[in-house]
Image (cartoon, rainbow, N blue to C red; front, side, top):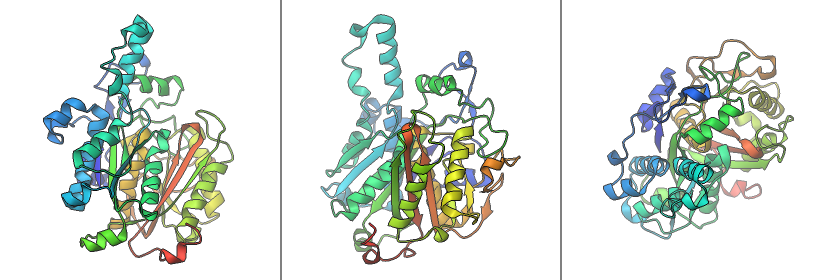
Length: 406
């Protein structure tokens, strides 16, 4: 796994920061946000593209693509994958994003609005395409299998991991580099502000006094392999993707459907396709944005699926912000680290119980507990609901036993 985040670059610094409850929120440096009335975000401030990319790649890649490629390189090193395993038709790249190179979008929009469509440079337009994230990553490693970018709003990371899992289980790939990336930019930041969704000081998921989200950025990437491929090369798996569930509320462009029907379906499907039952889930990584509507609906869904059982739940968005398309991919890295360590990262800023969100929140400090099975929630704009279940290796039913539910 590889990660670029506001609290650390790479698995170890990222995870250590989460366990210690260190926030990545700071004053925005990349643009002047004072006129928007909100000036804080979880910005990646210590990232230099040339530390991770070649000089040619650095010239071609925008900030979002650089995040993706840097995290992919970290993940490939972490997996100790030989070059031959990647320079193959059996190696694929599936990444998610919301806006991709959002800074290029901002430049193009600005020129169109203020100068007219003729001012849009044909040399700039191709730099915006979201497919560049996956294309440039595939080019860097020589992957010749499926190359795909999924712009599935803030659930893009879970969508990408689910699609990558299907490629492997269908026998169409042995190795998939998957995850998601997103960059902070004035255009989308202003959108969140205009929606009234941005908190003035901090993100407090599930807390009675929560006032909204903090926007973040970064990338999370993992290498998925078929079990046969991993065994052949003597690799040690960190975790297994048990299954995933998807749904679309089709309710509103920004508000979640009040009953939580979509996320309930996605959560149940992720568990069912893994060959498990709700009672087998040990920990929930929440979408947990810190907005009134999202946290209440997510809480309704958790109670609907798990009943009176109080499964430990936490939202690391209180520390890394809401990284939009990259959110669930970065959080997937956290889920696997929880499986490895048995540590639940904290939800910081939690002080008052909201009766609508009366869950077993891991409040303010990390905790330890059973972590054989972890679910990762995404409840995105547009009604995109996606849940991925991760499990400790060899903990899930055999593939043959799951054939009827896959």
